[in-house]
Amino acid sequence: MHNPRILTARQAADLIHDGDTVTVSSSSGLGCPDAVLAGIGERYRETRSPQDLTSIHSIASGDMWGIKGVDHLAQPGLLSRVVAGSYPSGPSSAEPPAIWKMIENNEVEAYNFPAGVMFQIHRAAGAKQPGVLSKVGLETFVDPRVGAGRMNTVTPDAFVRVQEIDDEEWLFYEAIVPDVAIIRATTADTNGNLTFEEEASPLGALDLAYAAHNNGGIVIAQVKYLAEGGSLSPQMVRVPGILVDAIVRAPDQLQTTQTEYDPAISGELRRPLSTLEPIAFSLEKIMARRAARELRFGETANIGFGVSALVPHVLVEEGMPKAVSWVIEQGAVGGVPLLDFVFGVSQNPDAIMQSADQFTLLQGGGFQHSLLSFLEIDQHGNVNVHSLPKRRHVTAGLGGFVDITSGAPAIVFVGSFTAGRRDILVDDGALQIRSDGAHTKLVAEVDSPTFSGKRALETGQRVIYVTERCVLELRPEGLTVVEIAPGVDLQRDILDRSEFPLHVAPDLPTMDVALFSPGPIGLSLDPMPEHPRIAAL
Image (cartoon, rainbow, N blue to C red):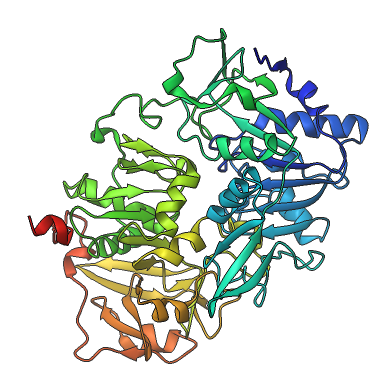
């Protein structure tokens, strides 16, 4: 019978050798094995070992609200390379995470690849395949002809290359084989079997464990509870004990950042929707309402962090909480995705999938809409969501954005037209732009492309951009203003605030005045048509 060692976090750190590649299952403060990472940092401060680690994070490990994650490893000499789908992020007023300081100071090699691809390269490593062929990332920051996912000047061009098959271009991402996988669950039995009953998602724990175990590495599991061997239901075990080498019990591990335990986000009970805080009336709510009108009743849709995350809450307020099945990259299907530091989880989900399986749905376009935020838009319809000059630490990086936008049939980007201090009032159903932001978000060329407008036109994706003052659409002739907010001057507030010429739709309609009033807007959605085979019955 396999019996893993039960260790303290500091003892588990002794299992890691100089030069190891260590992969970590986490999504910011969700599912982060923070105690084990803290043990590694503690050991390095005591002994100056382990050194020269490569750390892999499919989604960010740690955040700026209390879970340190990768920052425990962000010590010169300990960490030599980090490969991540995203990085800790937070408000611009906060002290940047230590990992961002190392990246910006050229103290560590750093890559940012799509989160879904990051999960898939673990599957490839576990199956001893050379890597992953994908169209995800073509003509974006991760394409080696653009940036190769490199985050500073000391990072070499590695891990991704362009490959042509049957006259089609693909990106080939190399599998990265870990020596150590650090994962997290709720309960381990003494045989090493892991269950995730209080977790908001299993994330990538199983695939990371396969990648390490199948290549002669070790698997360290941090858990909250320890059970007698053989006492866990086999149907509940998500990671079998045959893969687990060491268990670290952390009885105070948080379910998410600042959430000790909420059974409504782990699917253990359904909480009344009346417990959700109402959204205050604001410019952001106006944009979310307009974005909601793009949806259809009965469809499956994805949202990202930011203004777009308000859309499910708009539907709740409009009495349509189940009109759309929401899918988010961390694994929740259905329910109401939550906001702010608990983004990535849903209240009352219908299902909780592994992240890798959720990305199969998202990359394959098995949904109808994605609603996402933006930092910059350029004349080609390209979007930058991961990089702002001199302010890189306030963004999380790519995350699942590139995976999602590569497959989404329709995309709604949601965000303000300008950045900086603004004075914009909503009065009597109209906007009054008394003073505008100093910086336009419609720039001639984005700082770094996270989304390719050219590819979207080639593949037939419908792309619109919802702002507080207008709605734009990506058309073959260029970005076109297709709606204008009441009270807004087309020339002064829109055309003159863009760094490039915008097209204007003939007979330009005004956005519905109901969007600009505090009360409910009487939202109704057209039904999603049935599959033709079903409709033919």
